Image (cartoon, rainbow, N blue to C red; front, side, top):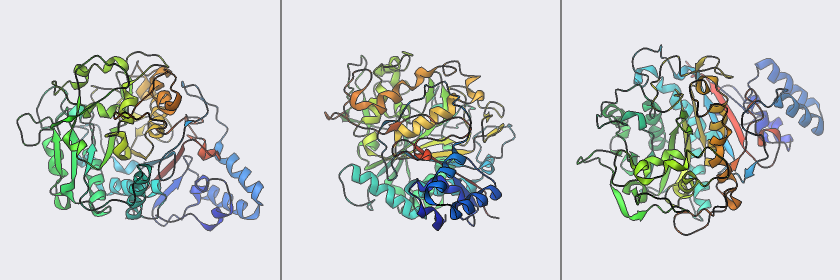
Length: 485
């Protein structure tokens, strides 16, 4: 990945507003959401070079902001909260249609439907861009250091430290213990998971034996474990619902989950793989849900353990806090985001958007996973999103979902329902939550900030406050490209 061309340093507007002027020799194209052809980019660059500072700044912002009206169901508002991460509020969106080659036949998840080389490039580029680095190795180091600085710790990743990766295997074993994975429902893309693991091992320098992939309430299919243990990945651990088996997730009975309000249900515990980890990576799915949306916050429903190994959230009594369908309501999702063992340890959040399901327990087909909005144009989403700011990432995910006809046309809970973002308002305004709740970190400490929440300017330009030159808010950067042949 090449650096930003020198002309960009001349301006005080955000450097990545001009990301479309990047050197293209890497075979990829990075810009803040709106792609332009080479001729337009060249013209903009020439005009910038020939203009004075104020004229160039105004011209760039005018050209990139577009003239499209706001078109979302969500009410538009100023940014809530303060961005966090190596680049505060930054969300990176890697998009490459060549990552998917599926004609709709067979199971969606078959590894042969995905181009591993392309997805590996998407992962590595996403990590580097999220950190503002020239290469993925430096990017990982920057992200670890940024996360540690928030925790008042020095340095980056150290050999021997443990990393737990929370996947979303809901569709792989929601109804039983069959580990074949032969279901049409959604779960973590196996090739994306493999590419993330390869990047951690080969670029970040993490020993496979120090990585655990887990989902405490579901199964991880046999073929996924085999695929993600090949070659340099040999030794990676997997913990899931494997009753009486060697891979069964175990609860840490010394670490109960503590809610900020009285939640009537069983006492819940976190898996040992979480409490023993130094870092977490939250790899969630970009998809619709019976409650509207399910993103990184709800992904941790698979991190709570109690007497019901398959239906822990029901036994915990937490679903009622998702079904209120109103704003200004307390939600357990914010407690999970704020928990010192969960959100407090998470150094990277990701949304798997390679192929997206319109809802929970909905079989994925070639038709219901093709999106209509720009830039997909009736193609697969073929995307991965990255951030160190959970609130920002879920805000972007929510914007994608509620503005996608393929999803809303099949998901009544999301369609025309702005209340699905209640938890994002609670999270963005956590220091003075609309519900009046004082949210704690699960260890007695009130939480004052989790990240920044807002909505994009429209579904075509997909720009946020930092893209438009503001000092606070979300910055969404799109990287798209092809693998060099």
